[in-house]
Image (cartoon, rainbow, N blue to C red; front, side, top):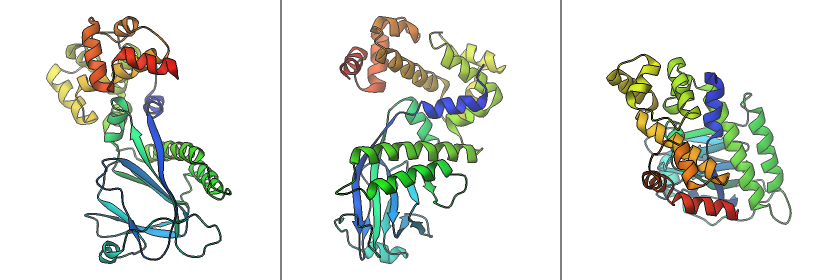
Amino acid sequence: MISSSPLVDWLLESLELDASLFHVGRYCGGWHASTHGLARASFHLVVQGHCWLHIEGEDQAQRLNAGDGVFLLRDLDYRLSSAEHREAAHQQPRQPMTALDSEAQDGVGLVCGFFHFQSGLSSLIIEALPARIILRAGDPSSSAARALFELILQECQRQPAPSSTLLERLSHLLFLYVLRQHVADNQNLGGLVALARHPAFALLLEQLIQRPEQPWPLESMAACIGLSRSAFFKRFSELAGQSPGQVLLALRIRHACQLLKANNTVEQVCAAVGYQSIAAFTRAFTKAVGVQPGAYRKQHEAR
């Protein structure tokens, strides 16, 4: 049996995401920058100097110093700027970045990028997290994250230029460490993390993960918790922020992806995740993943 703590770890390890860089460089003088409106999650790591984070609707700007980072998990209306005060920040121009300079005494050096979270289970996990997570260089609980940040700093000093591939991978790992620490430090998170921390619902979630081929009508799920059908649906939805059917579908699609990557046939995968009809499985998989299961299998065969 999986206890609730390893179950939370399982959820975090199930998070599928890609990190891609869009800026590595330095701003000098007065400036502002933002990715608001692109409908993408982003991250911004301060590798030199300092800047200010302004978020619409919040009166107080937050100073980000070298070694700090901000992970924006939603498309927030925000801007990074050289100016502390909101009005001044809005008046600063957009500027092109210059190359990082380890000898510079002014300006700010940034590593900025986007996150893409896979649909399905990964999206459900992220939806329940706060819109932003800030990493502070001086946080004593983030020793692993600081070690990774140090590798990023070292890579930024590489001549003639840092490796984008390494920075993307290091940023990806940094986020996973920051996320794990954030979840450990915040016992009141909602969503699937809350479900995994609830003793009774954790047992059900464990069963859904281990036996996705079972039909799992609502009555069977409710019986595992010892609640009536209506009380179970209400309590599950309150905890998870999603219906039991949505969570079951996400778990099944994730398992299907793993089996297809392992070169199982579509017919085998269909049965393994509880579908009686290949057509129904194909429709559900295609809607969730964006490609048909056979095409998904071929993509990973090629890799």
